[in-house]
Length: 567
Image 1 (tube, rainbow, N blue to C red):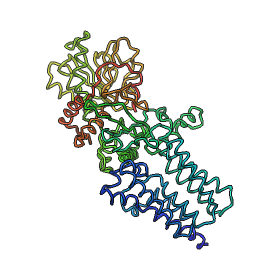
Image 2 (image 1 turned 90 degrees about the vertical axis):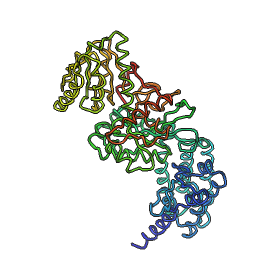
Image 3 (image 1 turned 60 degrees about the vertical axis):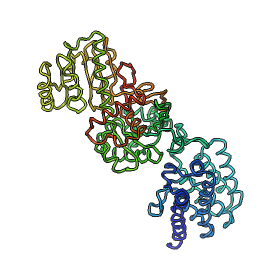
Image 4 (image 1 turned 90 degrees about the horizontal axis):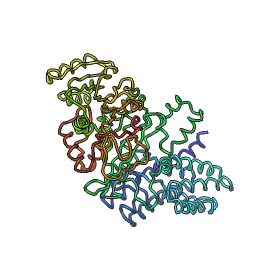
């Protein structure tokens, strides 16, 4: 009983160990003196090696992979389980056997070496092995996608193997090979469906593809279940839910098992200095309440997203919406992924408030409002941002209402402001209804649901919404004469386009994402926002550099209906 098992396991483990060896990576480091991650962080691959190192290096690296696959078959006299082992080891290497931190391609060189070894050391029909190679080449030429060509070639190999005479073990191994390679290429297929995968001959989303381009990454998450199937690759989930075949409780559990993926990209941004700026949109699948209720799992999700951003060559990684609060507001994520700069976007968000509030008060005055007799309200005044807004507007209005959940803390904040602004009447409330007399309302809560509804709002009131997701319900727009200004919204320079809807309106992004862009463009990685504290010098930096690069803080009522949902 033990002997037959060993006859399968031993050659597989031998092949796996050899496959794990980073022969191509060692060659790259020996010939260039560079770490393979610096050459191409996402996938070494023959095409990318050709792009970054030239034809000779690419051909040698590909040849070495072929030799690795062929050598294992030669040493095991064509054992098919060794073939499975060397391909599996190449695609999913053991860390201790990698020898070097090397990204892997799709293993096509190893596969070709394996097929050559099987042809040389077994009685398998030559055409069973040759036709899949020709089919691979045809698919690659027709589609331009290596993932389709690789899986298609192996699918044909499996079909030919099953329907022709040959060893049963080889038939089993080809099925397992197809499954292993299909699993390794699953992300590639998702990117093909979402339109973010590079075709043969086009620059991939990696550092070095366009030396003049600025590449950042930003992590988004769905605010509602419907947001989950925005990427085309997840559209099938929406179909199942709408047809009642996938109950939402099961869907929500399934969402927490999905790994982050690159599901979109922001393009068309052209900085004032002429450089192109692109942002990879990496999506996690936790909803706001799941992030709140499972902070450790949410932190792990953010860490995985940061590692993916690093693999794609992004220089900075921003945490968006509720993910900006996880892992001690990014500190734990940065500690886990030191090779890329992490930011929660707090400094530029605060900067946009500092920039927007005076302009908002001035516009209110220019349109007939009298600040000296106006009543203002701040919802979320318990928070740092909310209290900062209250401190900014207190000297300009007649009375100020502070609204929050902790009345004792609110009263302490109110006392602080009363001592400084003795001419302003300042009161504290825990009831949202207290804002019904306010001419100006500022919201800055972290509630995942709207907190302001039409019955709370005075006709003609001006509302500045800093909540993400939005604090103001869409129905508030039906109140006569209201002005709703989205807070923390920035318009990047150029003609920005996004392949997925981020719910901030055409050509606009949240300030936390804009901070990631500005930090990457200026390479001021020491200005990253991490932890609860925000430095005054960093706020001033992002205001100054944002203006220099062409970023505009939005301070007008855009009346974008989708602002109630922010990814």
